[in-house]
Image (cartoon, rainbow, N blue to C red):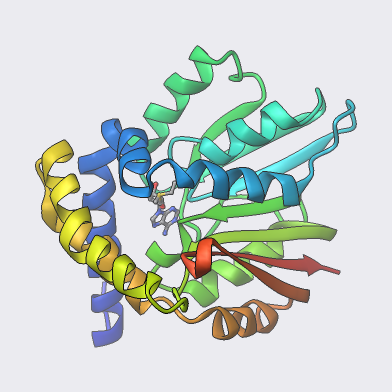
Amino acid sequence: THFGFRDVALEEKQTLVNDVFHSVASRYDLMNDLMSGGLHRVWKNAMVTTLNPPRDDAPFALLDVAGGTGDISFRAAKAAGAGFTSTVCDINSDMLAVGEERALAQHLDHQVTFVEGNAEELPFPDKSYDAYTIAFGIRNVPRIDLALKEAHRVLKPGSRFLCLEFSTVDVPGLDKIYDLFSFKVIPHIGRAVTGDAESYQYLVESIRKFPKPEQFATMIRDAGFARVSYQLMSGGIVALHSGWRL
Ligand code: SAM
């Protein structure tokens, strides 16, 4: 295959991301608790509350992209009724394997299924889902614009796109603490638990490079979504973005 310079860089980015998650898959859930002080649970629950899946047995098909070990899907399944199903789609087979084990252990394997796939090129038909979620995933995708277009393509008209992602802390004082924590503490926790500090260095850097919430909202609009909005949480550590496919 012939790659241009830009493509080579993007291929490398995906390879780096894949290495990170292959190396942490088995300890990913523990890492989340350690690195966020348990706050990731609060953020994910806020996403599920906003998603608001039906509590009765009305059919509702969620697509949980970059769903990893299935956290969002399990939380949504527990909040929803019997008609709820979720497809966890992730590029990393190790993350999916951990998720499948968790689904079995929680007796949610009939509602939550796992599919290997790339957010930039989803292996699903047009207009096939009632909602699309991506939590702490889009930052890792090399071509975010492609991922957003794919989200729009697979959603049914009248359905919702939700994205949870790290954002920019803009509370004076908290920003200093956050920087200190990100650059001094996180790589050490990463090394202690997985033996790999570099992976977490990458994650911290990717948070810095991610577009500001206003700019990301514009990208969501450019992909065709309507009524685009976002909500900052925990002083801007995290943003929950929303858009509707009309
Ligand atoms: N959503 C889960 C959660 O909140 O616990 C997992 C988030 S984890 C930080 C990011 C995930 O993005 C990893 O499982 C990784 O394999 C996945 N990922 C990275 N690039 C991807 C891509 N191009 N397509 C699909 N998934 C991707």
